[in-house]
Amino acid sequence: MNVQAFEELKRVLRTIPESGFSLSDWDRCACGHATRDSWFQQQGFTKCSDFAKAAAFFEIPRYQAEELFSAPLRAAITPVMVIKDIDRLLAGEPDETPKASRRQAVIDDLLARANRAAREARRVATALVAALF
Image (cartoon, rainbow, N blue to C red; front, side, top):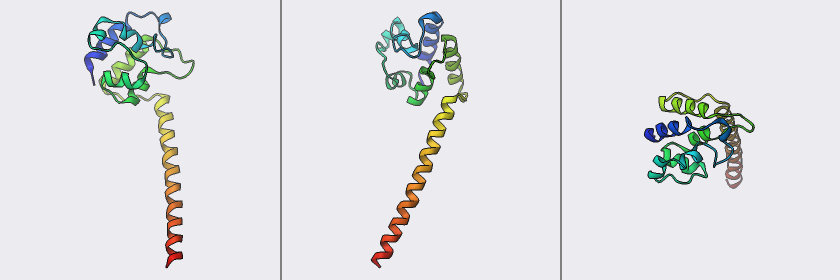
């Protein structure tokens, strides 16, 4: 995790008025504002238009970049809220947001489907072996 980059991002976020901030627009989101800051430019962070680039620069997993730099549709996220999320991330606190719950529900569903598919494959394989012998 690039702690210095997060501290610099918090510095940038403190200067952004709520009216100039939107997580639904790459130019007005936390990353977009960071790319216009001289510290970030000196580090080579001059363009950010996807979560993979943000994750790579801040040295975090992509899912954390998605959680930090995106918001549910029509959610009013402010720079101060992002700063608090960064502080939680730096402190190692778990994020108990609805996104995490939705992600876990998707994972649980995928695991259940995979389990059903594996049972069906075993059933078919057993039937084929029994037919051959």
